[in-house]
Length: 298
Image (cartoon, rainbow, N blue to C red; front, top):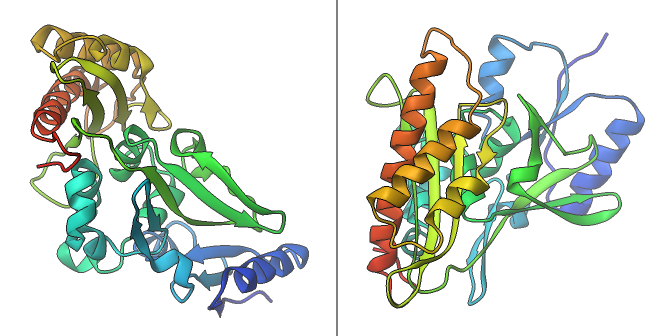
């Protein structure tokens, strides 16, 4: 008879060794980072026995490094720690705000950026924010380390590129240049602690004259996976990010979306709201970029 088991490696090498052995023995293994989604699943939709491999004792998964060129956030760093990091919040405010939307204050003490990504929900709040900030997934396994862009990590509802003997160590981001800003917005039926009906993230960079030179736009909860929308970015690049440009970006998001109708919203409603959120997020990102002459968001 199968049963539950718990493993708590203290290094990446140990974690990979355990994952590899479990795979060889055909033992189902699930990574435990924060556990806020996993515990709910265990109590409801998926009660099958497995090994829970806790990665919170591995130093690499628990660190935040804000370097001169890039930023690293460990997969098991709690949301509360991310939100309290002033340097991180100054450079990537949209990402930090998205992380802060995961659950209540109590949940924030456990919920993680890596866990939100690996849960791979179309409505995950942090995934659009990570995509627009050009996040890179750092993955380790028996063959060593590999990197995957966040927009390529999720392959379907609850599915991603991780093999059974791999784990996500953390996320890497380039430090934003001066005159850059990001923002993430979501719409939910309640005021707090609900799943996004629609989400939209925008990150952009302006030149000295206020013209957009680079942009990324991503939308969530309107397709089987979070979508990067190149057409929306193209609508912003070369403009002053004025109302016409923002409207064009919003229209591109509507065109790219393929939502479903459920008890929380219709196809038509979601297509309309995604355009509104993309415009608003784009405006906030542009305002942050204009106040960010030295690479420090406000």
